[in-house]
Amino acid sequence: MKTLLLVEDDSLARAQVREAFAADPEYAVVPVATYEEALWGMEEYPVGMVLVSLGLAERQGFQVLLYLANCYPEVPVMAMSQCWEPRGELPVLPWVGHLRKPLRSTALVARVRGYLEGLDRRARRSLSLRDFLQVLALERETCLLSVGEGRRGGEFHLRQGEVVQARCGKEWGDAAVARMLSWEHPWLRMRPAPVEPRLTSRVETWLERWLSGWRVGVPESGQ
Image 1 (cartoon, rainbow, N blue to C red):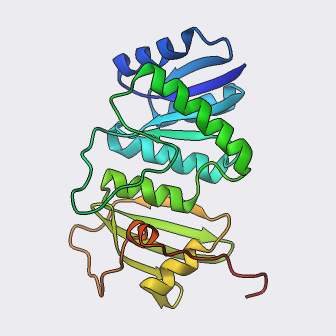
Image 2 (image 1 turned 90 degrees about the vertical axis):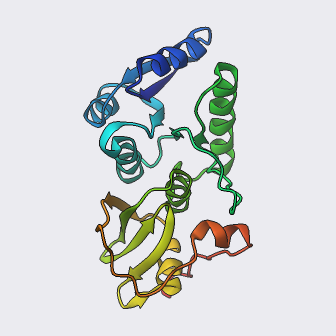
């Protein structure tokens, strides 16, 4: 049996998810409503997967995603989006682990099963830096995203989900984006952006570059 940790503060949504999996003996749903309760749930239960609502107060849903990426990268996680409309000027390709509300019970169960099967085939981290940038783009978040690996560190500045500036050591802009995306297992931290940020240039969003065929390869060892 897989324990599904549900991080959701909407009682109707919690009931819907529990009902969706009620007839499936393979899953047991444990509902929690806050970031602190999610941390407790990860310690108390043998969690096999986490479903996180991004509509929690004070960006707690995003903080749960970051906590899992940093501390439990091997645990599969799916994000339940706030209600949104696709951007007319930019085709949006959601992260494979991103669910859009409102949820349909049959579709929810199918997506969870399909995602877990896909992870088994890919054998990779359930939430990468690329994935999290897609989540922020889809949710149109304005924030600072700090990224680090070992003693190296950098930062993305996002406005309405769009990367408007990036820095990494002495590198800025596109070079900094490429550098941070090449890191294999970075830690992530998200915090509010300044009200009036000072920007030196606009960096194309990672999502725009991905859609246009841009890729960043992981440097060989020692480079």
